[in-house]
Amino acid sequence: MEDGFMKTWQECCSNFNVNPEVGLSTSQVQGNRDKYGPNGTFSLIILKIEGSIAWHFILELPAEEQKPLWQLILEQFDDLLVKILLLAAVISFVSSFDQAFKIRMD
Image (spheres, rainbow, N blue to C red):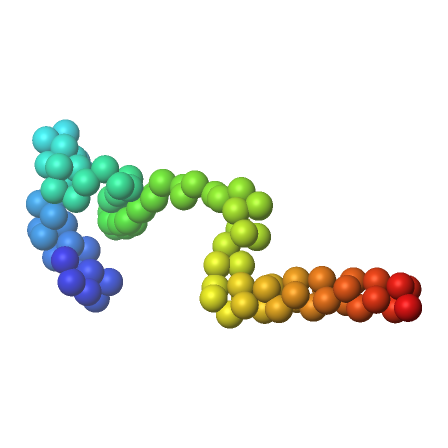
């Protein structure tokens, strides 16, 4: 359904074939799971309170797996420019030891 937030609750119920008095049947729930997949839990809550009807959509997505801290740090160095700068730093560090050794030998 496009622009569901702009529709009335009656239009939403008719679009999803929902009886506001009862809700979704078990077969409708299974059909929606088959159609939209098991990647999230989608619920339509319809309440009848003192003659008025209120509805609410709930979408719960599964939590993503979090990467370990060491992997996040390692990903920061996965850029060609960063690798070039690290190589330059290592070369500079090694050459400074070489120069210090030559000074002591003289």
